[in-house]
Amino acid sequence: MDTIRNELLAKIADLHKTPEGAYNIRANGALDSRSSTANIEIVSKTDKDGIDIIIKPNTKNESVHIPVIISESGLTEMVYNDFYIGEGADVVIVAGCGIHNCGDQSSEHDGIHTFHVGKGARVRYVERHYGDGDGNGENIMNPTTVIEIDEDGYMEMETTQIKGVDSTNRITTATLGKGAKLVIKEKLMTHGKQFAQTDFTINLDGEGSGANIVSRSVAKDTSRQVFKSNINGNNKCSGHTECDAIIMDEATVVAIPEITANHIDAELIHEAAIGKIAGEQIIKLMTLGLTEQEAEEQIVNGFLK
Image (cartoon, rainbow, N blue to C red):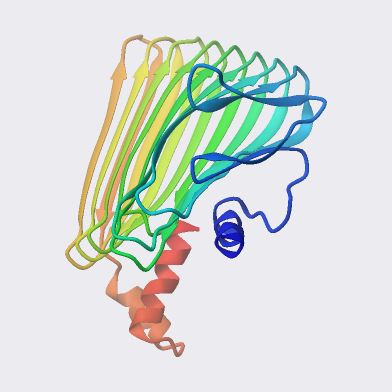
């Protein structure tokens, strides 16, 4: 378990040793280790499985790590994590889930993360999902993110599905107050028979609020992807949603960007592009000594960087 634990933590949270600052590591459905700081408190919920992360107002230059790892085949769990980011704070939160499944049963982690971002607070949230194992059991992850940003608050969310996740339904909803800003950067790759669905719903309620949602994905083999994005402009605001996808082999990609203006001063833009790798790109790299497969890998890695 120690070797698998360390490999998964490195993949999903860049952790090669005990992290500095506050952290909560969950392994196989139970608490593995935890540490709070003077400004960041982590406590277990009493009514359901999960934790509350309370960040004091004006906390600066601190981080929170809350990775989840599963190495048991057949384990299914649902957790509820609430983040309370105090007014004027500026913090980094690193989450994610890694599953190592060597059995013939499915292992599944579902989680609901709710962010309460206080007035003028800034949050950078990094979430990574990864699966591996040499068994026949599936790796399933269904993350739900609920975001509430108060006046002049800012949140940047970087979400990445690295590989090895057989099925995922990724749901994000956000409500923004006056002057609040939200930036979401999604990176996703599927292969084999995998299925991935992403669903963003952003409500720009406050005057001067804004959101920028960008998804980049690669679909290989016979995998399937569905991207949905809905931005509702309910006040004077600005919103942009974009989906760029590379499709390969016999894969399927569906993009459904939607924008709704409910205010005369709502400025909203949506974009979607799906296409294959250009042949001249591969040829150019092959003239530099790469094989066709190596050229494809270089292009995909650069696209998702």
